[in-house]
Each structure stands twice: as C-alpha cells, then as structure tokens.
Image (cartoon, rainbow, N blue to C red; front, side):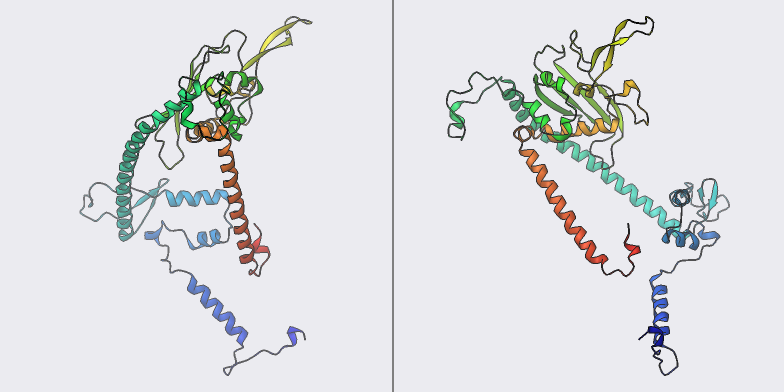
Amino acid sequence: MDSSDTPAVVNASGVSEADLAISDNVQKSDADTPDRPPQTPHNSFLLSPDELKRLQAGEISDQGLSQLQDKLKGLEMEASSDEDDEDGEEYDGDLAVEGEGMSIPHSVFRRLLKMKQLHEERAEILAAYHQERAELEARYRARYAPLYGKRGDLIAGRVDVPPEEFADAAGVADDEGNDVQGVPQFWLRSMLNHDNLAELVNSQDVSALEYLIDIQCHDKADLTGFVLEFHFAPNPFFKNSVLSKSYDMASIVDNAEPVLENVSGTAIQWKPEMDLCFHEVQAQSADRPGQTQARRVRRGSFFHFFGTPRMQADELTEDDLYTLTYEMDYEFALIFRNHLIPDGILWFTGEAMEDEDDDEDEGDEEGEDYDDEDELEDSDEPDDEAQEV
C-alpha cells in the first residue's frame, strides 16, 4: 500500500501523531541549545547569533573565519593599575580590538582577570618544572656519560674485553678475528640501518664514514640547545678530527615546537681533490667557443649536514641543491640525539629496526580497529551524504 493511502492516526484532541512527533523534535532541538545572553552593546565581545549559526553550518569562508578568530583572540584588556578612574567611577571593562572599543560586563571582566591570574600562576609552576627538569637531566647525563665513553673506547679499539668475560657466549670462537681492532663501521652501519639517516648517505660518503668512530651529544646546562659531535679517525678526506653541529633555542623541554635561534656547523677542511660535497665537471666555456673549462658542481653528500640550513623556498637555486631546510635539518639532529646515540648498539645489530616495525604494525592494527568501529557507528547514520569526509 502506498504511504499516501495510509490514514493518519489522530488523538482525542484531533492532532495527528506525526504532528506531535514534529513538535517534540522541535522542543528537543530547542532544549539542546544553551541559553545565550543577547548580544547588546555591553556584550559586544560575543559572537552574534548569525555568526554562530554560520559557523555551525560551515558557511564561513577562510577569510571570514580569520576575522572571527581575530575577534575572539583580540580581547586585550586595557585595565589600568587603578581599579577606579579619575572620577571615582568603577572601571567599565572596555576592551580594544583592532582599534574598535568592545564592551564587556563587569562580572565577565572580573572572571577574565581571575583567569589571567590563574594562567600566570601556571606559568610560574611551568618555569619551576623546566628548572627541575634541567637539573634532573643534568644529573642523568652525568651518569650516562661514562657509559658512552666506554662504548666509544670499544668502537675505536682503545680498550678490549677480556676473553673470559663472555667465554660462554654463543657465537664466540677462540682466536678468531684477533686482527680486527675495535668495531669497524659501527656508526656507518648504524646510520644505514635507520631509514631516514640512510637517505643522507651517498655512495661516495661510505668510505669517509668508515672513519667515524664516535657520535656524541652535549646538551647545554640550561637546556637551551645542544651540540652534536662527530669524531673521526685520521683519514684521507679531511683534516678535522671532530665535525660538530650546534642548535640554539629557547628550551629543549618546551612542549611547543622549539623555535631555532641559531644553527651552525663546522667548516670542513677538505684535503686536495677529496671534497665530497662538490665535484668538477668539464663544461663548455662561455668566453672561448669550442673549449671546455672545469666547473665545481654541488652533489649529494651526508657532509652537507654540517653546512647552514636554508629557509623553505618554492624555487631552489643551484646553491640550494642538497641543502637541508631548517625543519629537515632539525629533524635529523633529533634522530641523532634521541635515537642513534642512546641506542647505537641496537641500530648496529638491527634490533631497533625490528622495534620500529613492531610499533608500526601495532599502529596499523589500532588504526584498522578504529576504522572498523567508525564504520559500525556510521552505519547507523541515515544520511549517507553526511558520512562523506
């Protein structure tokens, strides 16, 4: 039977149940809407009903939304140190937004002042936290340092492990490999086992990185930056025994993304014809047709890491090639500081790679479960179009 042929059910008062249902829905909708004070000259800081409605409907453009954000975050209180003005009248709590006065009720203004006070108290607690954390990290850095030092001695071959210390360990054979000093290629292999760091290493870098015998990180005492040090054995590529990269910022422990104040690296003293960051190519001479001249051209190399990063740009010049942006440069620095240096042995053996794979698998499984739950929840939605993202 067609729904249009179905008779409406009418109660004793002559009102259909369909009309009652519509009325109930309207009342529920009104009940769900919080009571809002009317926007008056004294409440001009509030979003207007029209602005709220347009926000809820998603009808405000990026430009319009930006203007609303300015309105909300631009409430800068102009309260003087005296609560009363010269005429003895109570301060009216006027606020200025982009040069236009906005009024706010005294009661709301007092609440805002109280919240500002609470925020300042939190800032004092946060400062104490940063101070205590700096002291705590300094104490533990002092405990880590000897362990890193012993590791460096083992890698470089400055000390050895007595045969009897691990005599029963599986895979240890007598009198084999006694001609090998330290742990060759330790840091090279560790870097290559890290997917992100491996991207920095080019084929011509491998021979030079075989001479890398230690990587150290030294945090500043007040945690306003850190220095990465790469120690090299004497090698045929450059004269430096240590290549360093320093990062200065307001605070390492700040939850917000740190703003780099300064980044600087060591100038590499390349030996003749051993520069890994540039190579010579023969190019046609512009002044002498038919003749060629040698020209230095940048090429990809891990050792560009010690140069100054560049700002993000839409178009790259020839000098920008193979130069990291500040963001990428800092990300690589954090990988060295937070992963490779603390867990060097695990990256060398590949165990850290397995841990990362396990973490990714767990994340994928959690994501799949979450997606399944979303699908179950969405299946109850009557409007298919509303489910589109």
